[in-house]
Length: 407
Image 1 (cartoon, one colour):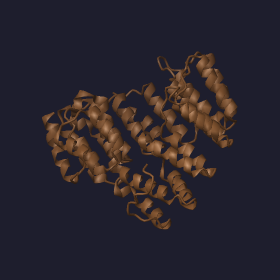
Image 2 (cartoon, helix red, strand yellow):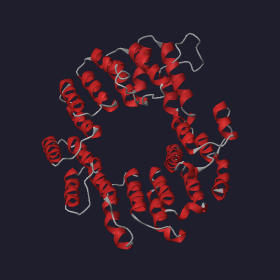
Image 3 (tube, one colour):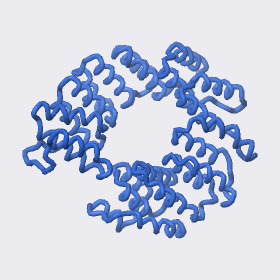
Image 4 (cartoon, helix red, strand yellow):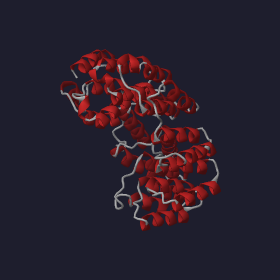
């Protein structure tokens, strides 16, 4: 651990001084990986993210939290194209005594994938022998996952065939096959994924997971192969495959095109089978109402989330704000936006641009200013070029206006 802290110390040269109280606390107090993960989810400034991560007190306390904290930090840096900093951060961990532990090393491979630095991920995998780190399905799966995260779907089948031949210690497991299936689905070839699923079924002790099945089902629906998707669903049900909420959500994704009645029908079917609809389930219902112009019903779904023990996510707010704006209900859209700010689930730029333009056109200039000012506080300057341009196009004064409605 001492070596790890020492190796991370040089990372501070990448960070800038931080003025806010929260980060000052982080700078002066070592924090757990779990706490860092929680903070990093809300922190988008790459310098502050790096500083937070460098102050993690004990990475080994929670391996999962440590992995996510590292990947979140890498993602923040990647969004600003800070690839040399990413390399420095990941390579610094190779001085850690735990580098000989395969799960620890696999985290480094995955992190390169998060930054779409696949060449670095492959190189790290091939250098495992230099660090006396064993290669099994664990690191192999990390490499395949790096391909997916780098959007290099065609590399997964290639490495799936190549690496087990090069290294006798690598035996693909059901997770490996699941990643292979996902690569074909993401590449738009669900039929090929079905072939792999059939291959799995023919292997001893190689169970087809619900996750793998759900991935294929979603790809079939997205590619317009509805009949094949429904046939596969019925086949898996007959085989006794236990369908979970995620599997039903894939069906709900397709059902929303048919209308809210069909979505409700499937949600009721879930309840009958003892499955709890989640936020994603209700998002599809809300979207189905919105697309039929039934905004009052959509708002009822939104307001009923808490009663159903669900919390709205960014997609919930994005969908509702977009459709309210599309119907010219900009004040209602702004009210929903303010709720998203309170929950730190702010919609994307395109949705909020639609809202800001509508507010200005409807002479709600102060609200438009409040929206933009709020977004500027939530994200670092490097993310705000588009907002500055929009602000200029709308002729909005960048100075604070005390008469505006705070978000």
